[in-house]
Amino acid sequence: MNKPVEVPGAVATLTGAEAVVEMLKAHGVEVVFGLCGDTSLPLYDAMARLGSLKHVLTRDERHAAYMADGYARLSGKVGVCEGPSGGGATYILPGLVEANESSVPVLAINTDVSVSSRGRYTLTELDQRNLFKPLTKWNAVLDRAADIPRVFRRAFEAMTSGRPGAAHIALPFDVQNGPVERGDVWADPTLGSFPSRRVAPDPAMVELASGLLRKAKQPLFICGGGVILSGAEGELLELSQKLGAPVATTISGKGSIDERSGHSVGVVGSNGGTPETRAVVDAADLIVFVGCRAGSVTTERWRHPAPGRARIIHIDVDPSVPGANYKVDVPLVGDARLCLASLNEALEGHRRDGDLSLVEMKKGEKFAKFEALARSEDTPIKPERVVLELQKQLEADAIVVADPGTPCPYFSAYYRVRRSGRRYFSNRAHGALGYAMAASIGAHIAKPKPKTVAVMGDGSFGMCVGELETAVRLKLPITFVVISNAVYGWIKAGQKTGYQQRYFSVDFGVTDHAKVAEAFGVKSWRVFDPGALASVLKHALAHGGPSLVDVVCQPLHEAKAPVSEWVA
Ligand SMILES: Cc1ncc(C[n+]2csc(CCOP(=O)(O)OP(=O)(O)O)c2C)c(N)n1
Image (spheres, rainbow, N blue to C red):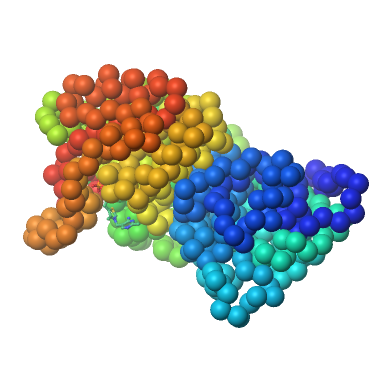
């Protein structure tokens, strides 16, 4: 274990605000995303004076949290965001909730009214403890400065051990000015990255699971975000090769395997899954869920796999997950990497030539349909075309962030990640519109070398447009792609299939998003013609600063989206 870091220095006492900065640094934090406020003035002054943290000023606290989320997903470190009391707390909440439910460690610090002003109708006072309690893995309201070191250590431990999650700390104004002993300011820096404390599975359960795997005729892995969160891609590949077993993923699990591999099935489920990927799930006689909650989307409301049809091994670090949705034959509770490594060990020398021909055939069928649509010269431009052009032009290490609406199902289904690891993500816990722009900024700050692209609907664009200023101010070479159709298309598609096309209050006006972006100083294009898309994207992706391509697209309710409810 690394030695705890003690912060050197001559002064015996720090202010609370200084101690906060030092505690973040001691946990390896380099960047904080946030927005200023009256109650944050001591904290900002400490950041200015100590000069050791990079601060990214955002235009909305929601996006500060989304940036911290994108940063954490790509860096493997805790993402940190901050905002002021009152509105700053209510605005930061959505990003924190998404991170928590997606098992991403994000720490939000909201400053607060002074302890001495509580209960006196003080402007911006609200009950931060109860606001954040049900929506974070761990939270605290500080009452005195001396508690800062202990509270921060506990927050980092909670965020990065077991199932990773979000934490919240409320930091009152007067606490920021109170005294903290310098000797108390220390941390274990390994708690700044995740997973910080890996838990190994019960050997008896490993034995049972390996027995089932030896006997299975048609085993299938279904991998959720837990594989990438625990860095288990290598162990997964080794095990799938030993067993000759195909590997399917959820949307968050995309990147568990290089999707060009013969073992890769692609994304399964109701959003991004297709009848072809479903056929692979239905053919399995043993399903191994890995770091996956087997939720409604992945399993098409618990119909695929059909309960009782296949045996189930369920690997998860959270003991409450196996058995929540399926009758599990073997629950393997532990870190995904350690669980898969134990199975590899138990199956040492075992080699089974699995039959991957069904996977190959079904993938062929799926992509033949996709490519026929992607080659269409029809206007408005089909979403398939956008995926194909980006697939052709992006390097294998590129990072793609997709918003709900058209981007998520299309990129989940058809954009093939060509390396394992985090190359693609979407906010799948709550699916709030307007996530991708900010998350892509956080991702880019964590990993500046690869090209980062955010794909969003125009509904999403309307919810995040202000952060274009942040991208311009920071000169970030991110490309934003807007799927422009002047409608909340996903909901209109639901009205089409479920409510006899009684369309109600889902259409909005046409906006030239390229002109809007141009006003922010973003290099922008608006494209109507499918034939022009490739060249426009080429220029946009090569641009040295922020760029935006507004693609006037076929509305989702008219498209052949890979969404099982509508296909049926
Ligand atoms: C904050 C938020 N409000 C409402 C929804 C419900 N919702 C899901 S998809 C969708 C429509 C998305 O519209 P747009 O971004 O334009 O993309 P499109 O579906 O048209 O491609 C809506 C309103 C949501 N996901 N998030």
